[in-house]
Image (cartoon, rainbow, N blue to C red):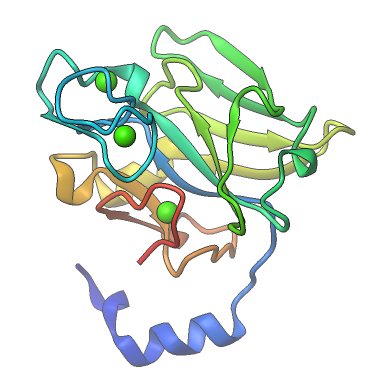
Length: 187
Ligand SMILES: [Ca+2]
Ligand SMILES: [Ca+2]
Ligand SMILES: [Ca+2]
C-alpha cells in the first residue's frame, strides 16, 4: 500500500481518467485458489466466485486455474469473437488464443467477460488483446507490472487488477495486487 491509496485522489481519477473498452482488466496467472473447481469444495461451476476450497500450494491449484478478465462494452461474446489474446507460456513459447463463444465466459447483464484457463500463461508474460484487424487494443506487461507490485503470495494478493476498475492510462501503475474479483468490478 503506497501513497496512491489516498481516497480523495482516487475519486478524482475515477471522474477524469481514461476509461476505454475492451481492456484487460484483471489477471490471475499465479493462481492461489482452485478456480476451475477441480478439487473439493467448489460448487461445480468453474470460474465463478465459489472456487474449490484448496489453496496453493495444493494439487488442485495449477495453471488450469489461471484466468484473464476483460472489461467490455456489451458483455457479449460477439464483441470479442475472432479477436485474439497473445501471451508467452511458462516454457517461453508464444501462444495465440482466438476468442469466441466457446472460450469466453459471460454473465447476463455484465460487461465482465472471462477467458478461463487460456493455457499456461508465463508469470512475466506480455498479454495482448488484438481485434479482428489484428490491431492491438490492449497490452499489459506482467513482468514490468510485477517489478513494481511483486508476485502473488496468497489469496489476498492473488490478482493483478486495474485500479480503479477499468482505468487505463497505459502506465504500469494502472495495476495493483488485489484479492481476485472474478467477473466483477475491481475494488
Ligand atoms: Ca484447479
Ligand atoms: Ca465454482
Ligand atoms: Ca475483477
